[in-house]
Image (cartoon, rainbow, N blue to C red; front, side, top):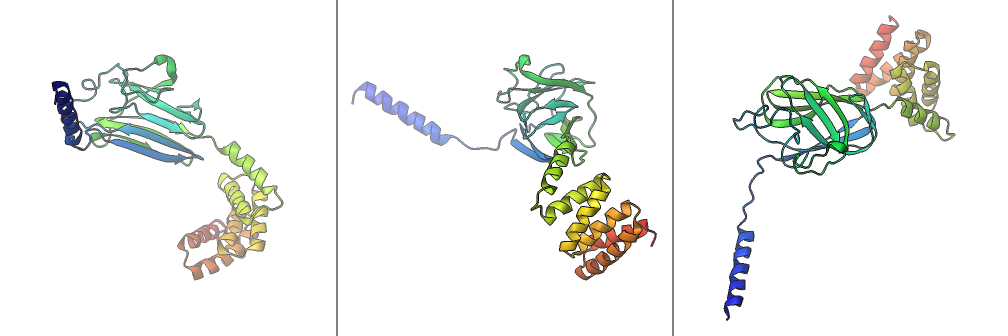
Length: 281
């Protein structure tokens, strides 16, 4: 065996040994994915979670005044399945890099078209889609691991919270759904084959919003004519009660109460009690 062949064999054996000798250990900054439905869309955040480990974070490990990847490893990304408002500004559907510039009394939040960067080394300000400032607050508890979460929910709004060490920042995300829902209601209730589920959902939405209650009552009555269920009696009752039409509300609430008690449905029993209270029975 000549020397060249021997060298190649030794090199191959060394490489093979190294590849088999690798040891899998837990990641120092484990990756995390956060998904949340907001309004009629879904928001997904992918990030890595570094730990404090006794270090001073903001103003030291993460310098003030410099662009930060908002986590560890790959840039944190945030994906919107549909158009939303971020801090009041329109953001189209898509995935964005979530960069931040921490400061002692103010942070800059940046959504950038590049969501694939490793760290912030290749950050390009020309790819920024939106920038705005927020004030940091002190979280209720010390955050050993960096955490991103959704807080302060309503059906169509939430705040994205970024929390680590003794610092937290939040910014508002909202989806405007009113026009879309109203258009869908108009389209689906106008169909000749509209189902009772469609009429029920449309009537209940109008009730919740306190709009077009005459139309909502007509739809609820149409549902009740086909399906004599306690939840349908109750829908008629609560819409009529909201109109102060207790002549219609009370008998429907009474029938709903009778059937709801037989079914043992405490939630509907309470809804009927609310109608009785509103009509002062």
